[in-house]
Image 1 (cartoon, rainbow over the protein chains, first blue to last red):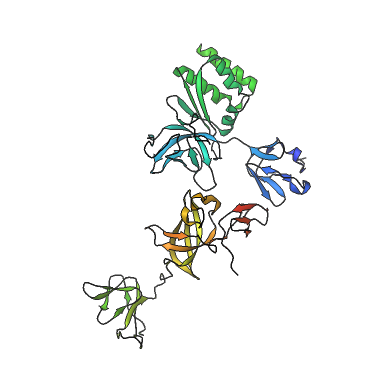
Image 2 (cartoon, rainbow over the protein chains, first blue to last red):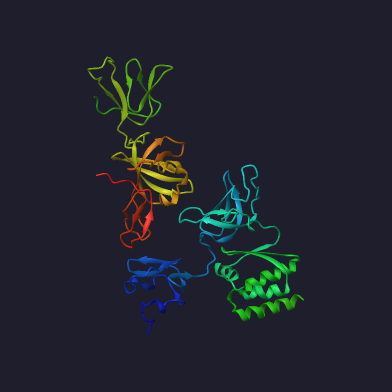
Length: 240
Length: 195
């Protein structure tokens, strides 16, 4: 028969859900506060999914839906890679692969004043932090961390940028380190910046290294940890 | 009053300023003392009120269906918020006083005009959302694109808003509205309900 419509929370956690599935029934869970993350919506007593993906639960009370897309939905405190599209009097307009352009205020840099406004050409790649991301408004970005220090944010020079899905970006940033990055790091030396909006920037001394790293990362999306290590060994053997 | 008057267009001569007084939709040009029409409509002449010294009849241009009410500085308007940005919110003016408008007027509510206290700490996203109905007062004619509106009084602000679940929210305080279906509280600059 089809899947049993049991509404106890344990049955849906870590399994795939599609939009419309009722994943939690609040009438059976009284006196609890639960926090709903992205992809979940409350309709009176039923919590239903609005995104297709895997339902995740983290103690004590957080539920959210994890999925991997090409398009990025801005979230506060995400670190992303943006490309300058235009500059206006007060803001730079940044393309962040999302539904709307991001605004980077001209003063949002360490030690930024009206006298030393940076001049970015159209097409400059920047490593940024999302400050405000409200529905319907353009997200506000910044090149400083929460305390105002530069902390690696800002323009990225040289190197090569390629696009990935948002799920792969999150895997690359997870800790402990992603197997493909560990395996590459043992043999090659390179610099990498991962944006949660599905962009990755790689820089190394020689173009060969950059290409190998980029290809290894792009191949690793659907491979398990062990398969990733085998794939990296294979690639490195071919260039040695 | 005469019936079945002629239709006039802006710029047409209506008479001399020595014979007529300019009423609604007409104006007197000072350099040659002529009255011209400034709107499209029917030319009507009204007899002078018996009590005044001025014996000239008033000519006015009325009757065209586009002559709805127009927002004036100081008038209270009802508007629907269309876009909320970092320091401004745009709104479509729907009613001026008790009457609905016949053409499209746009208004802007600036960050400093949202409320009367702590105006530099206003977060536009916590005061208005797209789709809210607000009561505001017109500050000025603004620029070519939009009137300047203000909600900086207790009885001005969000009158009606929909929650993210789709239900009309109930105001709880001057900063909060609650959804009746889910119980979620959303922040807005709420207008005080005066009975």
